[in-house]
Image 1: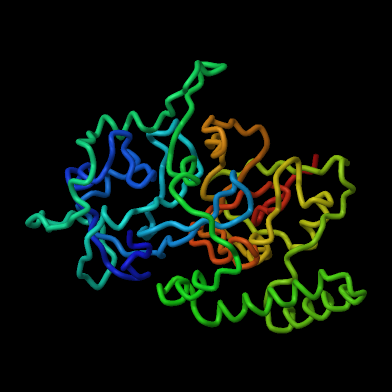
Image 2: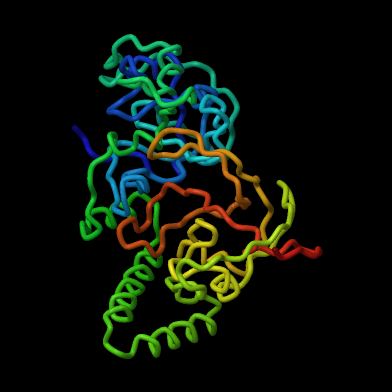
Length: 357
């Protein structure tokens, strides 16, 4: 089986017709264990650009290590709206198998319908087992071997099934970084910056007695060049102590400024959590920036259990703020582009006061 996609970032593709895609799926609505989700049918027959090649990914429920995926890409702007999955608000990028796509010409972004074309000979078409649209819809719920403890549905989506659809990928496998570059996912300057950060992090955390001096030097150089401070720091609140909150009542469209990283550290415990929410190193580059609120997140699918989580505390999603996977050793340059969640205490409403609790 061919392992790599032939598609590159920026290329134009056409999503195949519904009938062509169904012909690639098994009776559970999957190709190589990756579900084709009902939310994806809306894009059939339309033209988009490749955002990034999805030759690797993260899979948080299964641990911090990376996973490899064959013949798949992410497409620009195409994220799940959760319509067939209980209204999940995670807004995940879809994974598109190459078998579901055709190469297409074009020189600017458009999502208009493309006239149907003559069928293309492709050995992947017809590889399924007479899957129907109803089978794809049914595949959004997991089939329990025994009755569930409650009446709540157990969902299945690309995120919950990612482990089965991928293979282990070691961080030290250099071939992935070569493909990051040759696919157009990552620029050479980004690769070099990641390499130097890896070396610095290795030395600074080696316990050689001059870690603090190195961090000071790193922050000084970054401040002079307008860069990001060292992003892997412990919070200032003792582990087990209560972390603070703030109520802003933010709504979609509100303009906010993300606080300075050191201000945010004052709200985190030593494990970098605030009321159970982790502040990831990948969020640090956005500190100090001004963004629009994209959504106030109340419900998301737990990728490990498939059950819907109803969030009790404030959870904010910001427009154009996605994980770039610059710092995580085991999932460096993951192209998945997950939206991180923000506590309101990490944000300032632009032009308005707020209330501490």
